[in-house]
Structure formats: C-alpha cells, structure tokens
Length: 245
Ligand code: HEM
Image 1: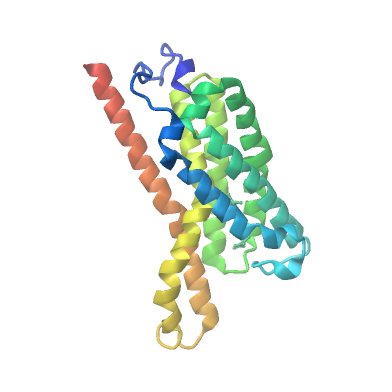
Image 2 (image 1 turned 180 degrees about the vertical axis):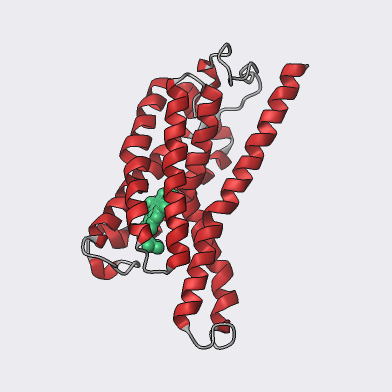
C-alpha cells in the first residue's frame, strides 16, 4: 500500500514505471464515488457491531462452542474492526500521496492492532466453528492467508520493495473486506437451499444450514481473491508494456 512516490527503482522486483502523472487528476471531492467503500464499511459495521458492543452473549449470532469462546469472538470483532477502518485510509491513493507519515503510522495500526491479532483469534474460534467442518476449514484457511499476506506485505516494505508491498497489502485488504462479500452470498444461497430442506437435505435443517454456511464462507473470500489476483496480473502486464516502450 505504499505510494509510488517512495519507490526504489534500483531494487529487484521494483518496477521502473514512473509514478502516474498528477496532471488531470481530479480532487477526490469532485469524484464522490470514491467514498463508496467507506459507505459500505460504515453500513456493515453499523449493522453487525451493536449486538457485540452490548457484551451480552445472548445477542451473539455465533453459539459458543467452548469456555471463553465469546470473549475471543468479541476480541476478534474488535481487532477486525480496527483493520477494516484503518485499511480504508491505507487503500485510498489520495490519502497515501498526501499524508505519507500518517500512512506509515496507520499501517502499523492496521497490521499490529488489527489484522495480526484478529487473524490469530479467527483461527482459534474458526477451528471450533459451530457451523460445521466445511466452514471451520474455510475460516482456518482464511485466517492463515490473512495473516500471511499481511506479514509478507510488511516484509516487502522493510526490504523497500514497494511494488511487492503494495500487492501483498491489496491481497490483505481484499481478505479483510471479504467478510462483506461473505454476507452477500447469504442472499444467494438462502433462497436456493431453504426450500430444499425436505428434498436435497431429507428434512435436516442442520444439513441445509451447514451447507449454506459452507458455500457462503468459501465463496466469500475465494472469489474476491481470484478477482484481485487477476487485476494484479493485468496491472503488472500493463506496467511491463509501458516500460518496454
Ligand atoms: C478475513 C478474515 C476473517 C476470518 C477468518 C474471520 C473469522 C470469523 C469466525 C471464525 C467467526 C465466528 C463464526 C464462526 O465460527 O463461523 C467470526 C465472526 C465474526 N466476525 Fe470475523 N473473520 C474475519 C474477518 C472479519 C472482519 C474484517 C470483520 C469486521 C469487523 C469481522 C467481523 C465478524 C463479526 C461481526 C462476527 C460475528 C458473526 C456475525 O455477526 O455474523 N470478521 N469471524
């Protein structure tokens, strides 16, 4: 998520493509749609958080599966909220260009006060998910990938490979935001699977719910990650073509 401005073009793995020209770049308030991710994040948090802010286990959507589960769940949600909100600024090109020191400081908050603790906690509660083994495996895979992409991103920044750093942090934030795409899949699978309880699931509500959660959890992060990877590959190809000219 580093800006092109502090790119060390002599380092291997760092593109020598010049930073995009500022000519013709319009100020962000003339392009109100750049605020869309912030609106989506705020709507998601306003909808999801209140029941956990009450610290009342009775309001949780996730039944506890071991002693201390609820405390770990609420801590996960707290750290994940830090990751989601700080990541918004980190991913915003205007903010990165304008406030480079703040970008570095917020980056540390995103990593150490957000993703790393949230992903470790997600791995622990995810392994004991009440929504069945397919969801548990998805959560653990996602937690490990979320942690690993973020650590790879910091490592690249420390080695001053800023293009590589940017790519890892794009993957990291796509995974952070995948909790939102995850929710969207419920609207697809509930109407498809719900009416099939007596046919495909032979009367078992549990089998239907576990299948619905499994599909939602797996598709929630794999689809955005594949799309992000395709865009990163395309961006690299465009950069190579520009340098070859
Ligand atoms: C991207 C990696 C993430 C993983 C692997 C993960 C994992 C989990 C797990 C395992 C649970 C318990 C549900 C279950 O056992 O099936 C959970 C619940 C929850 N997580 Fe995360 N999570 C992630 C990211 C986030 C983010 C970025 C947020 C944003 C605030 C978030 C907010 C929540 C909320 C609100 C719940 C409570 C369940 C609900 O209200 O639907 N998670 N998460």
